[in-house]
Image 1: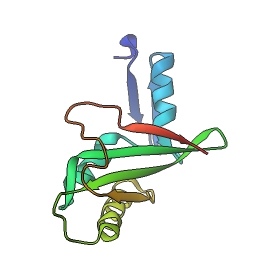
Image 2: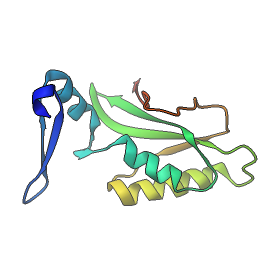
Image 3: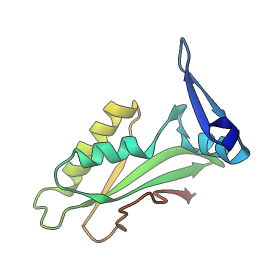
Image 4: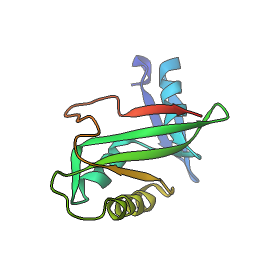
Length: 131
């Protein structure tokens, strides 16, 4: 896998080691780390999919660039059409699930359905927000 430019994550006695087989793979490792934790979009997708009231295909990760580092993330998720609950409460529920899964406090923004693009296949779900 490393010969083709992939990424390997090796468990260690304490923590892990991430190895990239190309410059692009190393950039992916660096971009995926948030406060020392590697965050995979699939982890976020799983938390959203397990939460009733969300549109499973409409979510986005924003990396908030602080001092030219990718320091924090915010997750935006779409509420289902006809969702009658409180969107702030839905965002809190997803935020708690992400904190439990990732060990990070992740701010979540909940938008009405149709506000976020829907992705049905592998897509560019991670966007960088400057300043």
